[in-house]
Length: 169
Image (cartoon, rainbow, N blue to C red):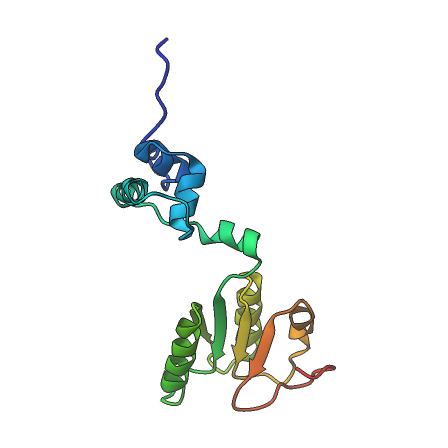
């Protein structure tokens, strides 16, 4: 049986990995990591080869892996009451601009003025490990967020204070 050569293209149906990029560029995995993360110590020629391999393979950095290393997601969650309300468009845009200026991504959703939907959205955002949460309260009880706040998720309530909370949030 012939020995199989290392892959320089990704397997069918899977995303290309840093290993795929390294194989295509003819470099070590650490070199690809340095290029992807903007670190020093890579010659211009090697960086060019790695960038060409990244482009050819369609490689995208896995931010989930980065979260494990850094402990931050660079995301902010915004729970609005109603996306159709003219008040929330400019608010969402302003929050997005500030988030972007800090290298963060804004994820937002609408509670449709339903307290249960607000709770569901807020906890779903927390489960995705947002670094911050901005809530326009629809409900009157926000005790469900206390464990998230204790865990370090910065939380801000906009337009009105949080309802029924045993702690100041």
